[in-house]
Amino acid sequence: MINKQIEIKELIQSTLTKAGMDLDVKEERCGINMSYNFILHYVGFDVERIKSAIKEVPAAISLEDYIKTFSLHEGGHAVDRKALLASLDRTIEIHEMKQKHPIGDQYNNPHLLNMLIEEHQMNIGFEETAWKNAEKLNRKYRIVDSMVFEFLKNQGLKTYIDSYEKDLIIFERLVNSKSEQIA
Image 1: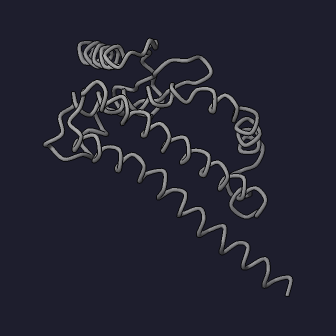
Image 2: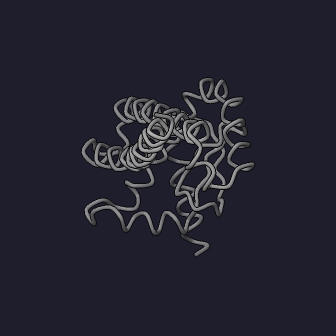
């Protein structure tokens, strides 16, 4: 296990270095394969989640290519750090709402659910920008095969889009049911 942690950390670090990025890399147990902490400016990774996530991709994609691709993606977020920092106040407001209101309330109150929809939209925008930045880095430094990169990009974006679309359907039903109650 310790060897796998070291191997993954070194691979993330070497990928970021090849892409001209100077970011710390830290292991975390958070359930997210890799993430960029824009406040403290580092890339985090969860070995257990990476081991699980690699099982969700075709066997033709190696662990090394998976890690390199997502390292570029997290580096893509770092390139967009100013925009992420600019969203901090609203992100905190949404986080505080989530802490204050039980999940059932969030999904039964149009105003609260609208905040979740807004969060999805912000996240998708940041994800799309990070992938565009990562693609530029990959083109410039030729770190991962473009077909592997494209597959993992599409898979990564799909999770955000699917979650957004699911909540959007719930929001539309909620708003329609409230309108019918008023009429």
